[in-house]
Image (cartoon, rainbow over all chains, first blue to last red; front, side, top):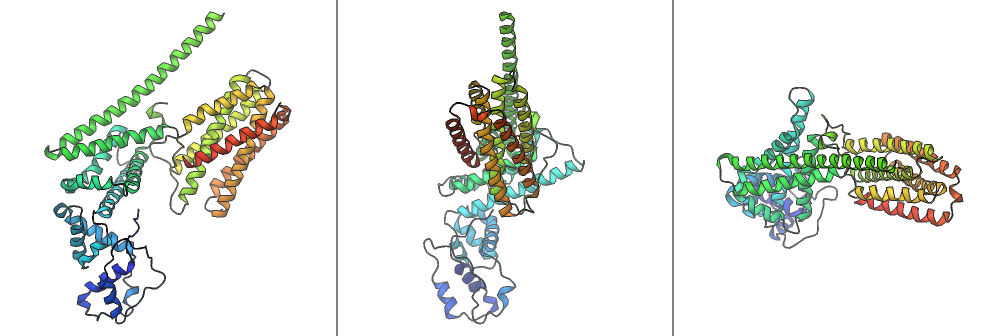
Length: 283
Length: 192
């Protein structure tokens, strides 16, 4: 999933030029202008329309290493993740990340100061990794090289795998959670959450086409969210308390669904019994 | 059905790249809801008129609707489409409509069938047009399915007419009301 760039394209173009000091290209007055006016406030989105403007002295190098603004932002955010444990989900982390790519620290200006895009990017990346993991597992099962897991074990392993991706950032994750709950971010974060849960159920082999579709996803979302919160508070070695909590919740869910189907079949049997009694009495 | 009933070894899937996901989503969701509703309508009609002379005919039409629902269940899983939240509501509403129209007599049940099948045929035609406008080659399989179902629904419509649907008292009022309900159901199921 891509998150639309919030600032003008010129900013990123100028940043790249500004940091290309080793190329020793003379900065023309026009590019100097762009660099001196950092984007302030909310600028309207501008996408490149056809060929990018070529500045004197830059030659034809642009076409070879041209990348879209989205790709650039993606790279910066990925690089920034390394600095999150130290700086948190902040503009500092993004600035450090930009530095490692050889870009100016002003690159952080492309993003919101609360780190929203960084966090959403991280969540999106984790979800993609989870999908790849589950896809690989499924291939192994299809090839007969692995046993198909029972449903509770599958769900447990999938949620655990996804939550383990938080471990390097666990100190700063509560901050991230609160940012994800900002009204501005709720549509995106909810979207990411629901598609992740849907993915897990899809690979678990869910084929429901009735209201069960919703029940299952709601239950798994509850399990995931509560386990995530437990993990924030967990100080046990290797987060064993969290995994035990997860196991219990998944077991509860299985029990609930078994009980529900038992209740349903008991109910049906009772109704049939009553109908039979009514027929007998009427005869 | 218990939790285990709808879990299989590996989910059959359709490659999702290049598809207009939002359009396909809506189409399959609303068609699934429609066939589900139609099933319940016939179930309601059978509950009242099952032992009458039109019983066998309604049963036959119901069986075809069951096949349609089965097909859409498969398509729903293959395209990873979410079912409409309103399914429990259509469950009850469909049954009530079927039983209610059947309580008006055989002609009433047939009138209901004519109204519903006419709505559904028109709806399927709209979808066929949408898919053809998008890309007839890419959606060939789906188009085939919808065309076949549209033809079968048209058959049901004609059977209804053959069995004196139009002789029902207040036929046009009944028909209009039912078709209005169908249109609302279609609108909601596409979105929710």
